[in-house]
Image (cartoon, rainbow, N blue to C red; front, top):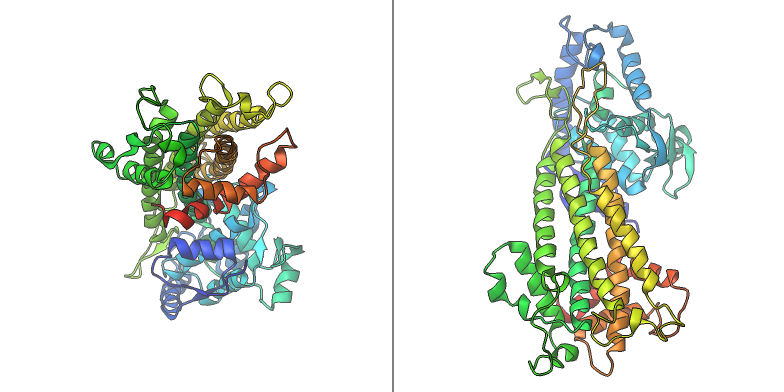
Length: 516
């Protein structure tokens, strides 16, 4: 879906919504007058240094371990071209379009702050690429997260030069030269410092962090829904989610998750059927049911922390050297990706743990010793039919993979550039594995929703809560009611789409109003 509303890019921070609109919905962009003024002022200072006999890093010298060589003015355009071409050294699978568009927007914002010394025409050309829907091909491997995402950003800079390979607005592969020609965008002849300004930033890892926060914010609400469906269908109690109990441990996310579950389960005939102590002799539920708000709440608080870090990064101008307001051009270490890498890794832990708890709830449905009167494996005719036995296997396989992905990338470092860059963040790697973790969590929650919906149907004639019944109805639009074994993979895929597109949360909110 193309968003036709223009996102204005100026020196002030972008919002999460700005990034999502450009990355996922194809919104065009436009540099503000303030951005052009800031870019022009910084460029004037760079031009002055370029004409000075005194060496200035990245302007009249080489880069990294080659920074000691003073470059003759006649070779500086070649220096910038060589920098971009040599750094566009990515390898492996193509990175998703939404990631590249986020990366391009975030680099454009840093340029718009006026702290990089790029020329206005170069920044305008990058904005034109984004608005035309031209997406450079960026590869999985090549970034160590310091100096930022060099290789991924270099593939974008290569496109500005009219070189390399891109996807056009229709998703077709083209040479960059042909795509620019069709869009009537002139390639850029890079001037002093511009190559460095285009590739020296944390934009790729930050873009993936913002996209993951967007996904996980939806998925943690979905986890509240799936947990509520499981508590209900397993004849658990909602008394443990009471606000006075949650207040005894005042973590904000926990209170929100518990309040969601109380709202979702309100009006459940299934819950009412066993509220009388004489009808239910169980003292307390298993941890995967009883502690759902504590785990999903901690996940919420971790997502909130990650969002704070992302907000600080959105307010940053990451480049080296940086042009300061007083005209100084100073070397710095702001390109190091550690702050972003840490929270990317933390969110992978969150995804793994939410999925692990979801899988344990699903497993309880399948065991007659723990499912309180439901058929084995929720099968139509146990023994003849296997029901959801192997759906749980699929969940378990994903959960084990998520545990491996939760091993942090940011504790690793490998030296590069002749030991000049001797400590790197691995933030890009942390971001790439987090995307896999988000996908895995989506699939695990989908299997729980699918299984819990089947169990709720099998509790008939008892009626579920209006909110959980709305989820079952949404699922039944593509997945039939319980019956003999069917080809299960398409049903899982239907549930995955419902979760990924926000349909589970939307179904609940049509009854409860907005979830926290």
